[in-house]
Every structure is written in structure tokens, then in C-alpha cells.
Length: 210
View 1 (tube, rainbow, N blue to C red):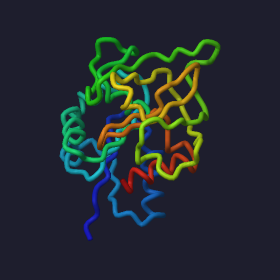
View 2: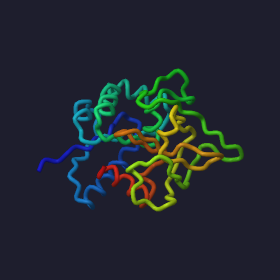
View 3: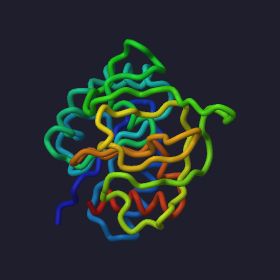
């Protein structure tokens, strides 16, 4: 049986090694039939069975790289055609229309809303370390997780969708902070599942199965 492709998008700004290693581990353990490819090829991305957009760094730099690699249209295409799509960390923020981190830089605009700076009086920014998730809108990513899972965050900005129903999970840091969003085939998490021990691997496994 031919293997389906899981494409992890390489645009010079992602935690690619850790993400691909986590998916490869799950692929082997669960006997999944995926060919896991780290790629900058728009043709491979457009034809993949599942697509992952990781991201670390600044919003503007990431968008500049996506544009210079010629990947914006491919990402919008797979998101629009129903391909299962997972954004990780800054890969979540890029899905929105823009960010206060780099005003005037348009995001991918796949989801309506903006990315805002965290406001957490008395707490350190960036929000860094383990924190709990509170589920809001149902998402298959969180199936069979503990009632209060803990995951690993590193971020100074968070998404504020126009429609609160897009928020699938929040975490507490000076108030409710968007931890995950989703609409149909497009799901994304602000935290790093590849660094979040058993809970994070369970989320990635749910994406593989979903």
C-alpha cells in the first residue's frame, strides 16, 4: 500500500527536527502509514494528505520567509481544500490576519482575527513553561486527554479570533489566553506539543488519526 505524505513545512523558521522526530516516533509506534517529509516544495505541500506548519521567531520574519519561499498560496490552498492542517506555536499566529508584533504585516488570513501582545500584570513575558489547558470548543486533537492536561508554552503574543467559537482551548496567564484554535480541517496550538511529554504526543497522535 502506498504511503500517504505528511508534509512539515520548512521555511527556515520552524522547530523542524523536534516536530518531525515526534511524528516519526508516533508513526513507528502506531503503525501509521505516513511518509513524513520536511519540505519547501509547494507541489509536495499541495498534494500531501496532512500538512503541519511549525513556527518560531517573529511574526514578520516568518511571513517574509513564507513569501520568499513561495509558500503562501500553497498553504491557503491546502487549508481551503479540506486537507487536515496543524499549526504549531507561531504557526497558529500566522493563520490570522496580522499581529501587534509587526503592525502592517499581513498574515495568512485563513482565520479571522488578530494576534495581540500578552498582558499579564505581575507575570513574566514571555509566558514560558508548563501550564494547564481548559477545553472550550470541541476538537478531535484533545480526544482522550486527561481532564486537565499540562503542556509547554513559549510565547509573548496570543491570537484573539473575531469569533470566540474558534477557540478550542485556553490557558490561564493573567487571564484567559488562547491556547488552541480550530475550524473544520484547520487546527492549531499555541504551545509546543513536541515538547509537552505524553499529553503533547497524544495530541499529535490524534492529528495523525483524525
